[in-house]
Length: 504
Image 1 (tube, one colour):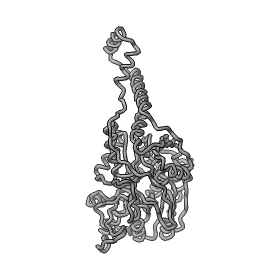
Image 2 (tube, helix red, strand yellow):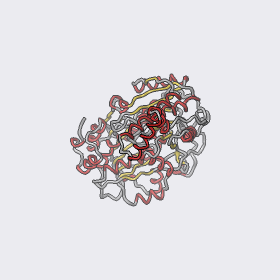
Image 3 (cartoon, rainbow, N blue to C red):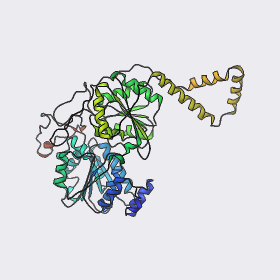
Image 4 (cartoon, rainbow, N blue to C red):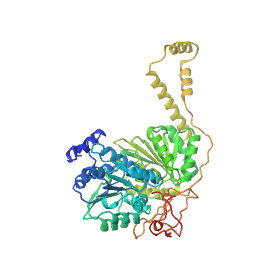
């Protein structure tokens, strides 16, 4: 593995990398940075957790001129959370060169963004729709962009942003360098490559180099109505440092969050119906460890970068293997190990087999955890607390009380009573979790894009799939005008004639 200092990186950026505590480049960084510095067009195939953000950010920052009055670099991302995360990393890497980035996304006051643009950031990190809003208002001038990055391009495709991306790429100068990063390369993305990229260099990171190697993967075959108790028992047996629980719908996330709180766990939810201010607040609390469990939909958790997540729970299996890899990639980061549990109903075994074939790593089957095992886990935690207290300095008065108790009582009974006092017994309080239909494997069609019909961030129902508009699982900005209305003030009838609202 190469060292960053061997990649001929500008001294100011290298200083920032070292201040962040990194010395060795990951495989994708080692391959992308040299070509990116040369201004080559690049196609990078890599999953989350491989270090791709720094891979494209380092050459992007090197190519920026700090004195320019207009933004010169653009990073397009599928979600607001990812836009924020990428912008934060760029700002850390560019701090000593004086290169700054500004996140631009739907759900945030556009006036605030316009004021931010007056500070002349060199790089814009944006969701496609909101970037087009700024193009239309002429608050961002695309003709000054000399570098463009498409991050998680397959996800932007599946969320319906492909036409926006084509419009943006057509408006930025032809004399630019373009980097595209994607876990997969469906046919529709290949047309983008052919049309807008110049002799790109392809760099693929093999599965064995991905962070899933640091993740222990297990599955539990369980009936739908038994899932929640199984989840609580697992949390009791082995309390996580930080955990993410993935639910398929917004309703599922809300119900799980409320039910976990009723059972005594510090949990908060994250999904697309929440206001941006509230979403940011939840993410801050999770990063600080104020809450130990984050319950989220796929789209809401995309781009979430927290290094101390020890457990991932797939309460509902994702519709596709790519989403599964993205989910479990939330743990096992920064060289740490992690564990991922997937709850599988009997009707979902075939779908589990498909996921295992794609990841090339069979999951270990585990029995359904019981209340007795959960109670034993809580007792063991009480023992650990007591042992930890033994290593601490104790008040002298406590020794006197202890001596008196020992004279009047059986010492073993005393210790057992102390353990009972500090044991937080598992809760059996009744909760209501609405059932969801089992997930089914969807085959891809021969046409471009994805054929799967996603319901990963919808309010609920019985897990059925909404037709029209290219997939029901997209989070969208409810304040956003339809695509045609932005250009000609006429409503486009893309999804069965309904006005669509995107998270961008």
